[in-house]
Amino acid sequence: MPLQKYVRQLKPVQESKISHVEKIQNLISEDIDLPADVLNGFEYTQTDKSERARVQIKVLSGDRDTDRDEILRRLKNAGIPANTTSTDSSVDPIDGTFDGRNFRINVKPKTGGMGESTLNSSITELFPCIAFEKKLNPKNIEDFMEKLMNVNLSSCKCIIKSDLEAAQKTVNGAEGSSKYKEKMENALGVLKFINDQNNDKPINIAYWGYRGKPKGVPENHPGDMFIEYRDGKMLGVSLKAGGKKTAEPQLNTYHRTIFVNKRGPSFNDKSGHDALRKLIYNQVYSKIKGMPPINNFDGGVNGRHKDKTKTVAAINKLSVKDQNKYYDEYLELARQGVIDRMNKNDKQSMQWIKDAILREAPDVPTIVVKAIGSNYEEVTDRDAVGVFLPQVKFVKAYASNTKQNWVIELISGDESVKLGMTIRSSSGGKLKQWSLKVTYNGLLKWLLEKI
View 1 (spheres, rainbow, N blue to C red):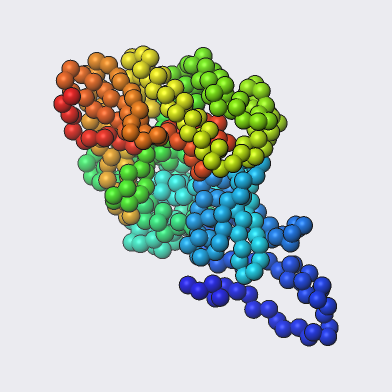
View 2: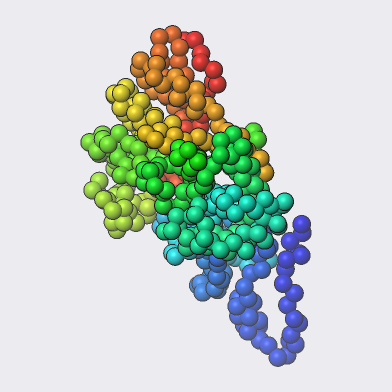
């Protein structure tokens, strides 16, 4: 669509009644009319306060990295020149030009609201639970939303009382999401899954697992939804969304939380964590001119020490080539550190796989369900791992053939299964990301293979 469609038509003014300087000042005071879909679904404000007359756009977000990247993608799709600019901010802003005007989009933390990423996942998780309990049977997205708006949420048993406010925000804010149609279709797919489960075995309640958990479910259980059958048995459901041929990560964690994590599965290995952090600092960060001491270079114990700002400033002074060089060194040290941790103790590694990947809970097993449009499929490779794990004699982790990939191989006699893993920075954080993202992406081969 041509950009001219979006250009604001300014009323003509008489030359004799306005000076050249006044014309520039009036132009500067105008907001930029970016294409409507660029910031659709985001809470934002504009101001022209800048020495260079650059329009400043502030976007409030609960998931800053993801939302910044989404806005940048939309700008480029609209043909608007824009790129991120390296700054001292933990999330670099977007600088661009539109209709002859320069602008900067800063994505700032949102307090008290619900970020779009949280909103999107809540639509997929909450709405099917309400629909099942209230027997809504929606015919389409419009019918679904209309019926949801007429539900008294405080009467819903599927919503834990402490999550009632979040549920209300989800219903009220759903139509403002940039992915509204997609997520509503996913919600229909998840509702189909619940109904199919109910046909196989009668369900009492399908609970929304936002923050609170139903009775009998551990607080740190990773389920997004909990199905309570009429016989009292409980099933956790981890929900994913994507295309038919996409492979969404079945685990998202970080290299530091593999070692120590108060809120989820870990090896509870603080000494290992500290040793790896020290190694990374000594071999990478300490070589960067202007880098603060190890105690607080990454924000210290609480992650907010002022030395972190100095670290970012030192990184920004590096050339792109040097930043990439140091990042590659950092990545390899972190990858090898996680691999070494996996190879250190077979028993502990198998327990971590059960807790983090299979997500086992004593009385609340978990399945992974992937919403695809308005349908669903179960992610079944976890079954293969779960069946095989009791037979495992030892665990072997090793690097793969690309710099961010690695493998966990479970071996029993002459059989093995290989778990495909990755480790990398997320959203281009690179050296500014103090803990790299670790994902499990599924079995490298669906069938057990002969060694």
